[in-house]
Length: 113
Image 1 (cartoon, helix red, strand yellow):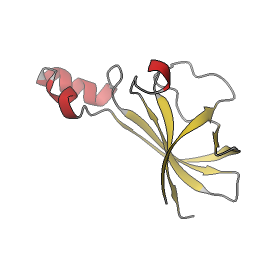
Image 2 (tube, helix red, strand yellow; image 1 turned 45 degrees about the vertical axis):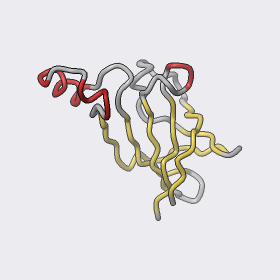
Image 3 (tube, helix red, strand yellow; image 1 turned 180 degrees about the vertical axis):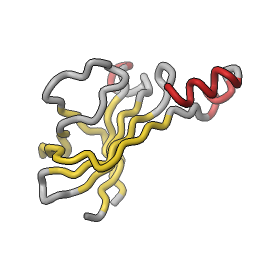
């Protein structure tokens, strides 16, 4: 089920890197708190899109696609929660336009169990 809504990520310990926070320990969505009990999968997409794809030299573009660059990309997580084993995909969007220039969390969709 497609959701695509902003969420608040919850961490037991604050992340060491603000722009690479890793998988949260839980999240708050629509007034409910969900604890993450299993990280099912993780991937990172640091490709530059649109105008951003054309403002770098090709050799730097390849490096940025692997490691990321400031304000570009997403860290995606598929997680199982403590609420009936519900499975969600969520991501950290590194774009500075979210959350006061720091990026933000989005609940992308719920997957069948």
